[in-house]
Image (cartoon, rainbow, N blue to C red):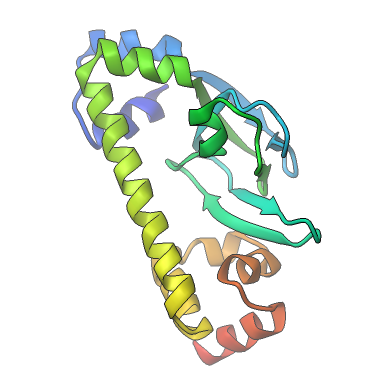
Length: 189
């Protein structure tokens, strides 16, 4: 739980009493490599804070092609947010790429924390805003940049992920073939 407190306190300071009030709203889960936290069609009860490991959030189209929406690493939040906030069934998957741990919480817990502690409402608003901004930047990059620019931006933003994630998934995330990714990698050296 110390990681949770440190994570929250990057945005808002907490007293010991406030943190004691927050702790019961989160549970710890150990996740095995290749384990799914969410399958398409599941009821989405939780959002997850990554304590360790790497996860991919993706969907599969009707032709069976996989599209990676997000990689999540330490201190990142993830879920199928449409299903989580709307309380509907998942259209996404979340798969663990490295053994790890997550903290998880329900929408009801999030709402109660936000109601009871203004600091948590502020925290969740900041996290949601930052996530939205990152998603908007990703969409712009996908729509209006070359594969080389997408690769360079990914390398700049997430240099450690290049070593931790299989190249085929990075290629999917960037919207390029595995061969194109190899060329981009060679050109950047």
